[in-house]
Structures are given as structure tokens and as C-alpha cells.
Image (cartoon, rainbow, N blue to C red):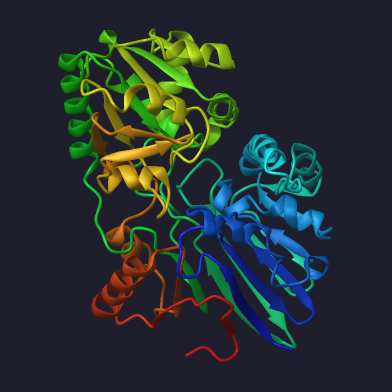
Length: 468
């Protein structure tokens, strides 16, 4: 036996992060994420794992996003009984996010089974349930940043700041077998320098192999300054149009960043002209988790939060927790900024708000995050003229604004800058990216740094004793 890593997800695609590290007889899974996107892609979540879950000794989870954590309840259902190591804040977020995913699974299955019953078809089971999610949480072990932890014989772990979402981690693994040592670094999802709320990604100097994300590997984001001007311009234009602004936003990080920016630029953006609604129970709970982990904020955000606790910096901000409160928003014709999930418009309350607003010329839709191929959000970004919601075709007349500068992922320049800090330019394998993004990043890494770079293939195994 040797030390190797095998790729079972996010290989040639963005979602479904899952990589198996084996050190002698011991097996550790890096992430266990849900596959998202087109129906045929999501159907793969129901397939058996490509390995025996009962023989996995531990899971190391980089962060709470569902495309990294969402198959953990399935893994446990299939026989995994080991610990799940992650940052304390990630454990807190997973507690609410996995439960929410289980609830959505149950509801969608209930609706589907009603249709199947009318057709005389057999009922189907949800991917996993709320109870499955709760049961899996018993195996989570919360860690702090910058603390080494021996998780198995020959495997030592350290989590450091990735700057992507609260609790997101770069994973450092020191691996030893038969007297041979290797170091593996998994970037998880890397954030951007200078982001609102969080600190910058940690720089790491040494590795024998780097597994690196490549979501935005073929593009460069707008600067924060340009992004702020762009948001202000949309708000001003929408105010003159006297419609609503609908923002599909991820419950974790993107929502909190938007609220931070709204508070910071409240006067500059004339936000007193609007009523701002956060219409997402999950995002509300996630915001409460953020409030309990201000020690992870950067200095500016921590200072703003301290001021906010003394005096509200968003006096026109409202939580919308219940279904009745959410439905009441659909009666507002103008003057509302509604933030709701899901971030890719694949489910949740955002679809109802799109149904009531996207056909109105005076309304505006702000796309504030990455949209996976096959999602409704991606269709809007790509210029769809009509969309389908609950069997109804709806015209897209609202202005669609894609604010790429809000991304919580490092762009091509940021990824290259992060990798360039490694000494001796270790081999790097690209995961978590679509084909064009990965090819663009690989080409730039080779040209700019002469990096030995490859793109992970599904099922591929790399022996850390024989790395080219």
C-alpha cells in the first residue's frame, strides 16, 4: 500500500466535491458534496457511492456549502460511522443547512409522489430526510483554525482560513506510511483578498501535491470599487423605474455580504428609499450563526458589527420568516428589495418572487453569485427570454444584472497568486471547475509559473510516491 488520492466528484464540473485519500489501510474522504445542476446531473446523487462508505475512517469537510457537504447524510445512511472533522463554524452552519436540505427533499418528494399517484406510479423516497441530517450531525467534530490534529495513524490535519465563507478551510494533511512522508494541500473553495466580512485566504509554503479549485479559472473579477459602483447604479435605476429588486442569494455568505454592503453604503446608495426583506428562514438562521462567530471577521467588519449592536445600521430591514410573511411580499408592487434563496433559483421562495416580478419591465433581478449549468439562474445569466415555473411559461421582461464582482471565489489572478506562494512549485491538480475554466487556468499556470498542472478526471488515482 502507498499514499494516494482518488477523485470521485467535482472532476470536470463544479459541484459534488469528493476526494478519497488513502494512507496504507486508512481512508479519509475530503468533502462529500451534492451534485447540482441539470436533472440528469442531480439524479446521480441517488446512485451508490463509488467506494464502500463503511470502510471510510473519517471525513474532512472544507466548508458548509451543500456542493461540499450535502451527501454526508447519505454517506452515514450507507454505513459510514467515523468522525467528520471540520471548523466549528462549519459544523454550526451544517446543522441548519443539512436539515434544510432534508426538509426540501421531503417536500419535493411529497409533491412528486402526488403526481405519481395520479398516474398510478409507485412512490419514491426522498434523497435524505430531516432526521437523516440530524443523525449525521452526531459525527461532526468541530476544530479551530491553525491547530494540528492527528486524526488517524499516519494522518495529521490542520485547517487554515480559506476566506470563502464563514468557517471555510484550506486543508493541510501530513501523511506518513512505511517511514515515507508526504504533504497534501486541498484548497477547498478559495475566497478573494479584501472581501467583506472575512479575512484573506491563508498562504501556505510547502506541499508535495496541491488540489486546487478552479471555478473562475478563466476570468478576472471586477474590482470591489467597480462592483460597488455597479450595485449603486442598479439601485438608482430601479428607484426611477419604481419596481422591485429581486436578489437570489446563497443563504450563507452572499446574503450576509449583501447586508454588510447595504449597511456600509446605506447613505451613498440612498437605501432609505427602499424596504429591504430577507425572505429565507435558512439565511436568517445562518446570519445568527455569523453573529456568534464575530471572532472570524476581519477588522472592518468586526468594527461595523460592534456599531450595529449599539444602533441598527439598516433601519428599514425586515426578516420574513413565515410562509404568510413571504406571500405578503408578492403583493408589493414597488419599493422592495427582496433577498431570497435559493442562490441558483433552483428552489425555495425565490421562484415565487420571480413568478410575480420577472415579467414586469419596471423590476430588476440581481444575480449575485456563480450559476451552475442547467440551473434557472444560469438560464437568466445566459439571456433566456422565457422561463418555466410550475408548468407555466413566463416572459422575462425585468432587467437582469449579473454582478460578478460579488463572487466569493478567487478569480484566475487570485488562484495563480495563491499557488505562486508555494515553494518549489509542487504538482497541482485542478478540481471544482467547468472545462473552459480549468483549461484557461491550467494554461496560465504553465505559462506564468511553469507549474506542473493537470486536470482531475473522474475516478483518477494519483500516487503521492510517484508524482510527475
